[in-house]
Image (cartoon, rainbow, N blue to C red; front, side):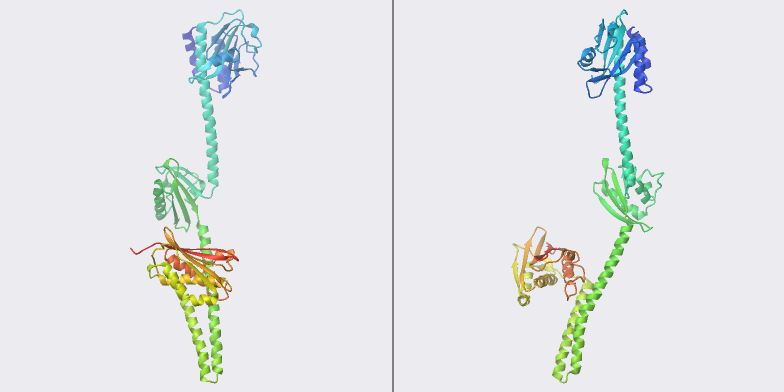
Length: 510
């Protein structure tokens, strides 16, 4: 066979139809006919190994077992595969595992070399003894077929890998879709042009879009939102496009509340997470109504309790005054009535102050001076209760902008609380400290401590564990400090003591 006719005869091989296995069988049959061979065998390499396994064979000498294999650098075929060079053998073939090796007169062993210089297969073409031996032209034609086979096998391997990857990605995409569709939250992925890359079933339901014909862009996807709601989400999208995560809660005309979170997604696109929080808001409102009713109940109970004691004293004093025989005696009971009436008035003032909120009259204030002056005012009261006070001013505590009267009252409440917690007396420690952005005021007692279950309710209006008191003291402390832009923290251990920390921001007059 001449080389030109070989290339002409190669044309039918350029179209690979059907499976690779069928194609290889056709190639071996083509080689048997073209090279007038008695046997053709084709070995393909197992990816990542040095082993070639029998893939196809044709002809009367095609008697190799399907378990036959070739190993790189072992035998004639292994050496050809390793060197990448074809071999012509005229004489008995050195195929130790070939069942008809003694009857093979001439053979060509041609490795299948890819464009990347990798040996992917071995083509073996043989004739029986007595037949004309193969020559250079035959080998050139065999090499042409081997090159085409190497390309076909390499492409088939590449296609198989790509198909496997595509199948794997398709399976992952399907799994991802199912997972997303199982989520109660709506998930929408938009590209930079705000085209919809993906939208799960929950997102379509929340945006009242059909599941069978989903919108392909954000404008269409948002058509059933109210103008106000869409505008709010558009602002979130703009923020997310700049790399800033943004959240918004919108209320739709059908009373639904949707919470939307937008963040930058892959390839600078945007990911939207949408949740229907209508039920949560309804529950929160109901809880708020319940808390309000509970606070009203506590307030009613506190007011009734606090008013009942002075009224009892007034009623008793009035009765004693009626029974009194002397004017001086009646005056004494009248004085009791007057004192209890003043207590009732103070009580009313406390409730009214709580109801109307905190109005500050700020000025420049030295925290250390406020505490020192307050301790002087309370000196006799603290001595009477057996409370010893240790005041430790901080280093270089700055002047801040504060309402000294209200701040003094808040600290007074904490000192009285600490003194009452130390039954029979004890040491109360007060300290101040300057930090970078605030001034800290700590009031620490060594009293009975506060049970953990009461800490969460400590600043609740009208909550008290005392036999007397409105439960507004600590509540007013927090209101005053928060009105200054500060915060209150408390730590406590039962039987060890309690520490209140007031944090006031460093602010001066503009």
